[in-house]
Image (cartoon, rainbow, N blue to C red; front, side):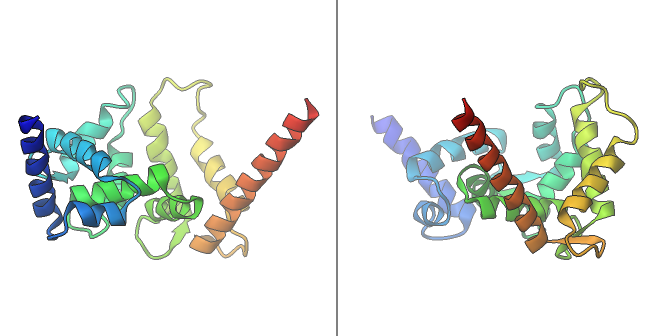
Length: 203
């Protein structure tokens, strides 16, 4: 028991230092949708992968690529890293990591859509243009590798981007704003919910 409490105290102290806040664990609990015990478990995992307490882009790519052994995940991991690195510091602290994870796992629909929009908005100008969307889609295809079924055609990225803008670009100005993105995604979610309920009642 004393060993567990020593580890807990060490984790709390390290988390306070990593977060650069005297509140440490309490502050993170208030900022995220995780409780203290969950934050401690997440921190231990983070610390095991990144003993220095921060993750640079090369390390992030190495870790992320392990999940996609049949493809090249480096480009998508680059975009994902930038989405986690909200301060553009070139590294991800535990605070950055757990804040993003909280949104992705337990955030509201709107929060998740805002985070996704920021991922697609590569140059962070508040809009998604066709070039950005094409880069993201190609990165996803590279990550999935050559073993997808059915086999993807060479013009598939362009078709997906065209379909995306047809659905999202409401005023046809060539870019998708955050409001357009959220509105369009919520339309799709609403349609799927209604369709699913209709099918359920039809059984």
